[in-house]
Image 1 (cartoon, rainbow, N blue to C red):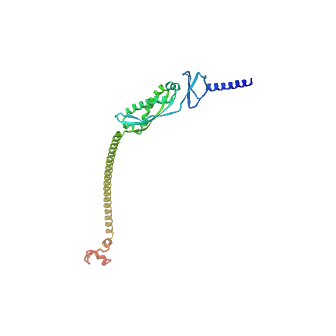
Image 2: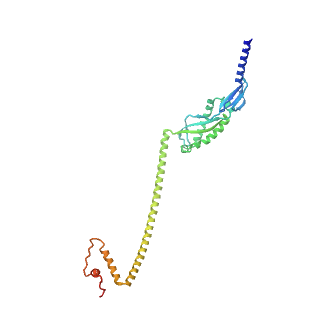
Image 3: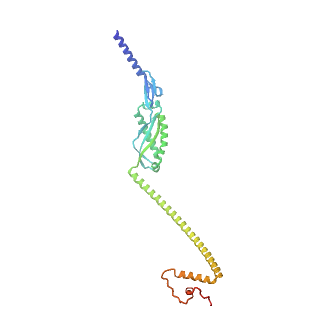
Length: 295
């Protein structure tokens, strides 16, 4: 009897443990869940925590709601001018409606990717088809993905219960035949721009040089005019001084002018003058008191 009682207790504990493990479940913080009864959703968007379910008849499907990344295959698209580009991109998506996601994919992430990827390819094909090559290779090409991201996000929320958070271009390559034509055109455009800048620089240089020459001529003319004015004023003042000195002492004035003439004539070594010794030029050298004119 003791053995039977022990077996019953152990069996009861095992049954309780099985019932607890089958009835209780935990939803992680990074997950959301739906509760099913024979495959039919009876409770939606179950939040993180400890929850209860009826064993056997009820099951639980959990889904990762973190941001997921889908690396798409490099695809060839045609631009508006019918030029081919090879685009390598990736998509970031997230489960936001567990019920809709389960109904569309049965909770299979691989199935979700198979459904998302063609939509992304179609969206990018349409977007590149309305752009020219210059817009595609511009520095702001990431902004060009805002439209496809918003459109695809709206569509995927309704169809799959997922949100498209971002579509990013990793690389855009050109086929070799297109690359050669594009590089040739880019080179031609850069050379044209360089010629225009050189022409503008040459024109600006000529203008600055002409303005400088004109200003130089004006300044030289003004300086020459000022110099002539000052020289005339100086000569007039000197003449007035000479006249005043002459009127005060004629003999001293003659003596001073003679000394000035001597200084100017003999200021350099080797100066030679051929004059008559009795010339009036030497009269103050011969006698400190030269005779008066007419004496």
